[in-house]
Amino acid sequence: MATPAKNIEGFYKQKKSNTSKSKSTKHAAATSSSSIAQPPALVSQGGSLDLKDDFDEEEQVLRQFDMNMAFGPCIGIPRLDRWERAQAMGLNPPKEIESILKRCKVKPQSLFDGRI
Amino acid sequence: MEVDSPEQLQRKQSTYLSFDENFEIQKEVYRGQQYSQIYFARLHCMRALLYSLVPNWKSHLPVCTVLGLEEGKECIIVGTLYKHMKLKPCILDEYSKERSVAPLVKPHNFIHQDDYLVLEDESGRVKLGGTVLSPSVYVTGVVIALHGKETSAGAFFVEDVLEAGLPPQIERQLKSREDKYVVFVSGLSIGSSSSNPLLFQLLVDHITGHLGDEEEQGLAAEIVHLVIAGNSVEISRGLLNGQNLASKDQSRLSEPFKELDIQLTQIAASLPLDIMPGSSDPANFSLPQQPLNRCLFPGSATYNTFRSCTNPHCFELDNIRFLGTSGQNIDDLTKYSEAKDKLDFLESTLRWRHLAPTTPNTLGCYPFTDRDPFLIDSCPDVYFVGNQEKYETRLVKGSEGQSVRLICIPRFCETGVAVVVNMRNLECHALTFGMQFSS
Image (cartoon, rainbow over the protein chains, first blue to last red):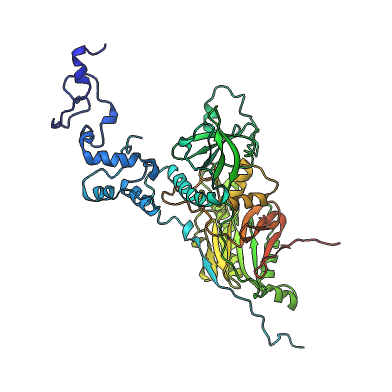
């Protein structure tokens, strides 16, 4: 049976920046009233719901780097190694990517890691 | 009469330099990468090279990417070729309900007249049309530049092709040299039912100077190096069917190596030798094959003249560069393309500047991430391939004065032929061993 209309806004995740999520099971939906299980793509390693990435600016910058075809495919190679390879090949990857990767606590693998 | 003449023959020597570090994979770490990485590395290096050659070819045309093609506009695109082959074995054929297309008997060569070529780069792919580019000559994995325009059907009509051509060659001073010979042999297949141990023993005796009179020994003293290009042993298939071997059969596994080691010890005591792995040797399957383990050769590995090398193998003797493989690259080209003879395949790999363009598509290869080790940067003086049907050789001249001796080394167990190259003038001849019992 389809979910009732008043649950539509509950089904789609809402742009709340500081909702703290408890690390409960997958069935605990992003917002409380959806009865449909969260699609697995949103659940990253560790079981926590992968919603915060959309708001993390540095992750956005890194994802743009992942998606840039000029530096080659991003799957199966850590981001820093891909940056260093691009540097060695003379492709001039943006320096800020290197500083983000070395400095912060960011994901070392590309956005497709674990999903493909 | 003096039995021992006071003057002893000395074997000539030459300086040896190995360039095999490129083909070693000990430092590589597998992190789950796919083959897209090696294709990217290949396209990047070759495209940079082709972009530098395009102004000399057709400087008035713009260069664009596949996605930047506009209908009717003449331009130049550079990318990797993909050949769609109807008869190429595909795992999905096993699952298809209708079996009419796939023949029950697999042909040795998978060419079909309906094969077509597609050019790919990171932005997209485009089907290639026109009659200039013949699909039977090319294989998947070659990077080339094409001049043409996009048709209304969305295909790219090819008007002209630019291959990378022979790589630059370092000039060698060949004139002031003396006669020094390098012997190539491949396909010894010790342990197979068709190999004759006497023929290899004759070869060893000739090279080490145990045969013949002073003149022949003098000729043997001018041999400075021996290269064994793969398939030195053959283990009978019945022993490798996955079942546990009885203890009496276990010795049959190691007998071919013991026999080979005895022969190699005789050779290593006398002159430097390189042994490369082949498709039937106990080395890894995918290229680049790593050197055979020295434990397999307890007798000969103690000599410093014994060198276990990678496949492909690149080395320099007295500044003459040798490059070659044990045959898997050319055999794969034979299956997926056609040419008049094996030397044409060899020449094509040089013109495409890639030792094995069909890796990793149809030939196994290690998934490198940052480089493609099979790219040929510097033109060799001698380019050889082992384990072919017959001895063939040709001298190829490049457009910038390069000169390469191409050699197909035949399988020794079938033909009894080894190949000898004179380093003074790069001339090549065959050394045939046979047994004729005249009655």
